Amino acid sequence: MIQGSIVALVTPMEPDGSLDRLGLERLIEFHIEQGTDAIVAVGTTGESATLDESEHCDVIRFTVEKVAGRIPVIAGTGANSTTEAIALTQKAKESGADACLLVTPYYNKPTQEGLYLHHKAIAEAVDIPQILYNVPGRTACDMLPATIARLSAIPNIIGVKEATGNLDRLRDILQLCGSDFFLYSGDDATGCEFCLLGGHGVISVTSNVAPKLMHEMAVAASKGDRVTAERADSFLRRLHQDLFMESNPIPVKWALAEMGLIKPYLRLPLTWLSESCHAPLREAMRLAKVI
Image (cartoon, rainbow, N blue to C red; front, top):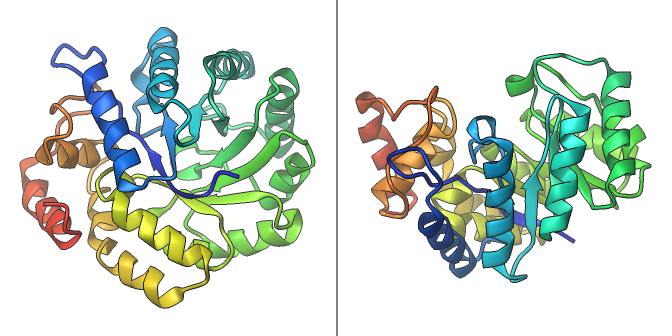
């Protein structure tokens, strides 16, 4: 069972754009020490769109190696080509990942039947637990609850990361798929309420910066302790907002550089955080007690 506070981990980089392996190892140890429940390697926040296939697989393999079984590793292996997604998922399995996270195909805007057949093909091709990822704000493609329900009948499709921020979706999916299907919030701002309503965890950007508080919130929410969960989340609300002042992962990489955890680099077409955003994000970090 993979649940709780799951970090959508950034990918640290060197000044020349190459992977910073020492920085990645430092982040992994930081998260294990702070109580993060699982790591997503090379998701959107990990700049998957700008890593080539070799780098993508290298980050997954390195993360699995350094985590060394202490917490689960979920590999981001989605693509808008079904054959590419199958290849990435197979390589993640060979690297020892515990599960894979597969975003809905972006840009080409498949139908609901196309989404069903895409994910069905990947699940049948690679025997590894798979988590669907619905984020229409990024992909221009919305996987509806009825399609998720169809896919939930496939044994190794174990859950969905729902990033619309629409809590009615959670209720619909719970009703259609049942409690054995794992539901993860992909929206930090509503993640606390999502878990209190029956979700199993949050695949989070905020947990990059404030992993201990995110873990405390998720533990309390899993126990139905609304007071404790909402109190922990109250320190994080500004971060939930300000980490999206510019496109993710621009603000979160700036915040981690401010904390001395990574070097201040990402890849074009992403650019470093605008000067006007520095003071408000720094204040959000202060409120969360991470600086």
